[in-house]
Image (cartoon, rainbow, N blue to C red; front, top):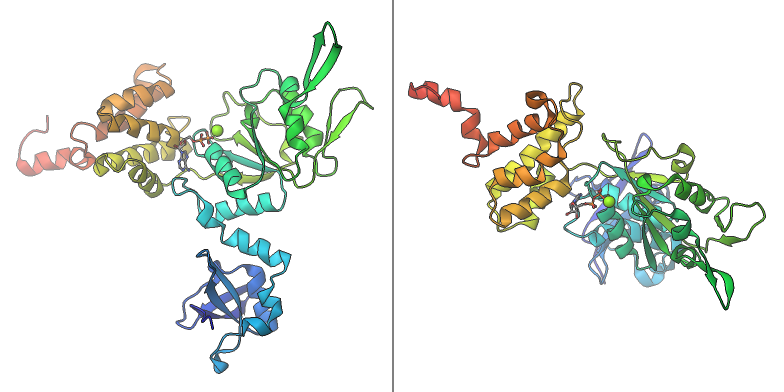
Length: 390
Ligand SMILES: Nc1ncnc2c1ncn2[C@@H]1O[C@H](COP(=O)(O)OP(=O)(O)O)[C@@H](O)[C@H]1O
Ligand SMILES: [Mg+2]
């Protein structure tokens, strides 16, 4: 019989149910709160098992005194998981579905999967270039459901994209051709990506208002009251993205009523460590000191843009660091790569006080020999050597 890899006992602490294994290691985060609570209330232990596909899960085992897990055959409530248990297992083993190249915390990823599984409208928010579209597409890929992609930031005519067009034909007369979006919402269990919703025309927001409302879920084909409506099919999930960061410039502020129709999943801006890991993963052939300097530069600008006395509006995005490292890979120097990929994003008006000058100064500290440390300690070194630093 299958032996559990680990066995944990649940202890209540405040309103939390903690799981401790036989070595005294806390395993709480690996087990769903529902499973832990049930085990505590049912006064039984949980064992860790591996499924055929390699995923780990926790289920009831007999008490340690008997030193043997509950026999699967005599325990139908465990052997035949209820629908809820399947959902729980899917959510909590879903981290393995996240592509390695997408940097996102396990919690955020699971929350994303959970929201989709539970049929929520999801809005991924964060500054430009932090991985919203990438995460939304990865989610769609993980779900194995029919999917549709609409870039609302790129459409000039929301009505024809979301509803359709009226045509005239000399033989048929006027007729209406429905949009792909109409087909999408009528597809049961479809996952519909509404990319760049924050950049969409306000007409698009108005059209989507009833579609996204859990109590309405229909699309009106015409403004007129009493005109035809199309029902959103069962199980359809909407995943939208919105640039909501420090920079609002090219993004219209989304209507509050529309925002209220979404569960917000905020994409985190990467830490220096994560940025560094990502760049090393993507560019194994580029010198890792160079990559670590790029991560440092990006982090310095992000920290600066978030400070009270910020001299720049936004930090260098992960999209930009990835582009920049692509240039390094193709033999451009850090200085050259920064000049074409970073500086154009920063305002040069104001000369020495401009955003561009500020960012240039940060980059320059890391240029020359590719290592910042020597430069930072230039004066100290000069002092130690008894020479002038110039
Ligand atoms: N969190 C992240 N993990 C991995 N790559 C990222 C991440 N954020 C940004 N990138 C890189 O930047 C590019 C742009 O990301 P994207 O998802 O289009 O950003 P957004 O939609 O937030 O503007 C991606 O193709 C990827 O190379
Ligand atoms: Mg995007």
